[in-house]
Length: 70
Image: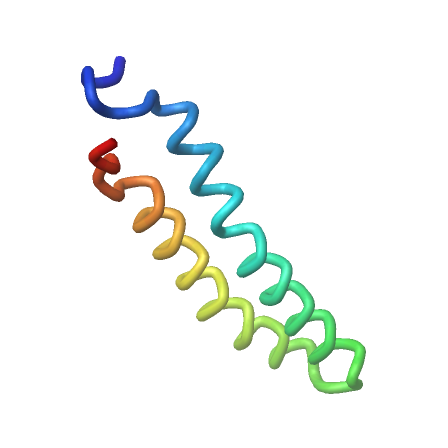
């Protein structure tokens, strides 16, 4: 249930997913590049941890941003 001046939760989730999608793509590309480059798979895991952290942080930031005053 949304507040009168605030979009619904579904719209917030969709906008957050759209905003975070490029970060997910770049992160997956970086992990894939590390693994295909011939590095140890452990390096792919090491890269995956900060990528996952920043994706989660960006999701929370975009999802909980205040509504624009239109």
